[in-house]
Amino acid sequence: MPTEHNNYCNGEWVASESGETFAVTNPAAETEVVGQLQYSTENDAKWAVEAAADAQQAWADTPGPERGQILRKAGSIASERKAELVETLVAEEGKTHSEASGEVQRSIDILFYYAEKARDHGGSIKPASSAGAEIRAKTEPVGVAGLITPWNYPSAIPAWKLAPALATGNTAVLKPASQAPLSAKKLVECLDEAGLPDGVVNFVTGSGSTIGGVLAAHEDIDAISFTGSASTGDVVYQDAAADQKRVQLEMGGKNPTVVMPSADLDEAVDIVGVGAFGTTGQSCTATSRAIVHEAVHDEFLDRMVEYAETLDIGPGRADPDMGPHVSESELEVTQEYVDVARAEGATLETGGETLDGGVHESGHFVEPTVFSDVVSEMRIAQEEVFGPVLSVIEVGDFEEAVAVANDTDYGLSASIVSEDAEEINTFVDQVESGVVKINEKTTGLELHVPFGGMKGSSNELYREQGDAGLEFYTTTKTVYANR
Ligand code: NAP
Image (spheres, helix red, strand yellow):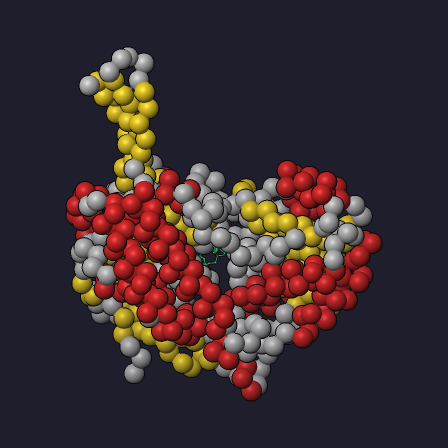
């Protein structure tokens, strides 16, 4: 019998009032139930918000170094429990063991990083115009944060929202994605074990529109940080706008890598291959368009196809090159896009088929897929696929490459492979993207620098991670003090 996992409300692990649970299954073996999670009601979510609101002032009054000490201890506990956290992530999301291990380590590092920020964060003092006076810019928590997270980084994204929120004195209600909620629960367990006071973090699982809807609309929630699809982001924004909450939306991408004639083609193929097929293409920053100069297009395409065909695909526990899609429905969406691309006139160079039999028997496996003859107007070049599907677009010169890179509603991550300094600098200046990488894959982020998208990838009010991650969760009170 799979373990039943409760919500966490006001320091207690509690079942939903619904009495119902839902199953989380292994994407590599659909018959394996990883856990049963609470199918929570609106009331469950409201009780969690009330607990967070009741706990907020005391947590804000707790000295920053003390808050940091709890985050540090939670990081140490997560580190001791790392093998279990990695296994959970592999089992519920389907990542390869290496990918999951990297992600869990990132969550641990985030807890340690914001533990130090909690000690450091405060405000500043400036001189005033009159003698004997001073002005203090005092930093205060926003209040209660509602955190809504996606399934594709089920550990790191909850960590990079929770840690800065708590470090700065906010309390939080976390609603993880239903597809992979257990990694987030494990983080909450670590915070609980570390001695976080009751009500500071609350964790509620269940339907996105029910639980997420309560968080976005509840008057006691002061800030909503959402990561997920653009369509859900729109709904969250509308719900939260009713009482003018602070809202952070980080959403999808259609990320390009431009390959120029001066590029080392072996390096370019590796960069695009890892960016496109790593995490089964299920990263918001995954490379979905290779925009390749005509002088190197044919050779690049040949090598890219060869690269895709050598990848080993299987269950994450065996640590292959690429794991399964997270769910049957995500696999179906990828299949639909393969059909759409072919109907639009793109050439399927390799892949596009689901994998059955043997280790692939009961999982959501698909071949890494490369399309050529893609032009910017096609849906396959415009819409986020969120699977291991790469479109290769041939261009005649650098200006056209930049124009194609920018010809999308999204603007999350973009990269260029080139040895030409002028091209590189112009690309950095002209590309419409929140993350720009030079001779690097579009995926992969560092935790101490800002992260966020432009255009349809973000509402662009705040960035996450690094110091920027603290800004979203704080407000400034300006104190004019006459001594
Ligand atoms: P999603 O379907 O939009 O779901 C995201 C979260 O929103 C889940 O927790 C979901 O709950 C919840 N939700 C669903 N309907 C809601 C509603 N009406 N109100 C409030 N919350 C609601 O996204 P996903 O499929 O989990 O994640 C994949 C997407 O996330 C991709 O588009 C990807 O590019 C994007 N992403 C962006 C970033 C970034 O930093 N820019 C990072 C990672 C992923 P349920 O799971 O219960 O439905």
